Structure formats: C-alpha cells, structure tokens
Length: 352
Image (tube, rainbow, N blue to C red):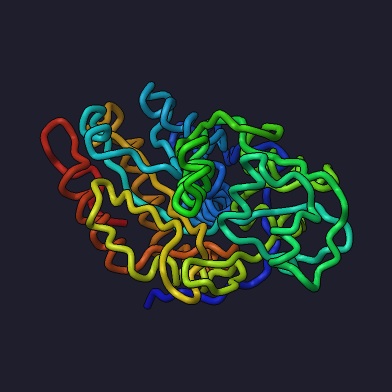
C-alpha cells in the first residue's frame, strides 16, 4: 500500500558533476536530460534500479529548458521539466507528459548566527527582495516578521538561476501570485530578466553560490538545501500561517490538486490554500514522444518510471519529495497504454 511517509534526514549520494552516468556505455541504458529539481531522487532511483535490473540511467541535470530542447531534438529518450508544457505545445510536438514526483522550493540564506528555520519571510517581502526593493537584512519589513532574530546590517546578495529553469518558473509563479509589483515588472517564465542579483546554473550552482557568499539569498529544491547544509527560511502561507518546509507541508499543498484538470497533468501547486501548505510546492514532469523513433528505448524508460512509481516512494520521502498519489499513477499508466505506441498503434509499455 502506497502512502506518504514523514520526512527523514538522509544522506544523498550525489556526484560532484551534475550528471548521473551509470554504465553509460551500455546500449540498453536510458538517456534523459532536464530539470535539476528532481536530480537527487533520480540519482537515488537510478542507483537502486541499476542494482536490481542491470540497466543504468544517463541523466543530464542541465535545467528544464535544456531538457525540453534535447527532447525536441530527439537526442535523449526523455526530457524532464519542472515547468509543464501546455496542451497545444504537447500536441504540436507529439509529446506525452506526466508528473513523476513532487517537492518543495525553499528560500536559502547565508547569515551568520541564523539557524535553519529561524528566519521567516512572506511572499511580498520575498518578492521585494528579488525585485531589488529591499536591499538590506535589517530592513523594517524583515524585522517586523522576525522580532526575535538578530538581523545584521548587511547588504542582501541575491542569487538566481541563470539557465532556463522550471524551478524559476514555479518560484516566479508564486511571487507573481502574491505581488502585483513582481507580476508587472518581472512576470513568470523559466528564464527572466532579473532586476538584481547574480546568476548561477542549476539548483547546484545556486546552492554553491549562496553557501560561499555572506548575506546571500537564493531559492533551491529542498534536497539541495539539506545536502549543502544551507540555512532555509520558513514562510507565511496563503492562510497566514508560518510553515516549515517538510514532506508533510508539501503533501498538504498537493492534497486538493485536480491532476486531470490540465492537459499533461500540468497542475501548478504554488500558493495553495490550507493552514499546513508549503506555498512553493511543485511537481516535476517527464516528456516522451507518443510515437517514438526508438520504441525499445522508450519502453525501457517507461519500465524505469513504472518501477520508480511502484518501489521508489520510501526513497523519495527520505529525500523530502512527495510521491504521486495512487490515482495519479493509475491514470498515468493508463495514458501510457493508450497514447504511447509503436508505428502499428501497439502500446510500447505492457507492464513490468
């Protein structure tokens, strides 16, 4: 029986380089590229799957924009994106899209003497920081939210993504939802014209830059904050409640999502209602061709995704990701059987 497991702190076996390369020379290995948001759990799943089946995964953690480009160019078997493609775009390219796992984006800071979760921010203040309106850590707006925290008289160093990023899409979607100023001046996209700050590539790059820069603030997937021992902040959610980033909070945000309401399951989970909801929760999606040129490769990829749905929940929860609900998994696998077919219309995936 699948169920959500409370988050536990575990080590993440991540390579220094941002590519999973497990037996990459083998012809049967699965190739993919894209989002850095799910890289820690894809690495974990890939290692376990290799041990069980002998089939490896070569996944390039290059950002959602890069993953979309590579699947369009047919240089990989699957693309991965944290920004879902719209139905018309999927149809025009001939792609199927489905969610693989959910997680949370967290603000991370580098402030001496401040512990993880000790600082709290709300959406409007976060937007004002990233739009360049709030420039110092002892600004009155931050002090008002943190009366018991000793805030330094220190300039804020904003760190943001430099590459096309689904993490940026979800981050900017949230800020646009809570700040009219952000919505009008910056907007929502995978790549932005940033008003302030320095750019870094991938969740890895943002995490490293924040860790090395005093007074810095950035945004990363929660597993990267834990892996790099960064100081994450709590947030005030849509219901006005202070919440900390946990798997339970990410699950609460996703609890009422209607996954069938959008083509390709493209539901955005930012700023969901609920006293326990984490406001920057996001899913991450897989992109494969409905009628792929290499049916054997796509079949192997679908086997890996089915295995991950069926056996990967505990690993996902251990890294503070949230597994997809049973009903969504069932719907996705039914979609595979109906839509992902060979030249004769026969389903490519027929079960593990």
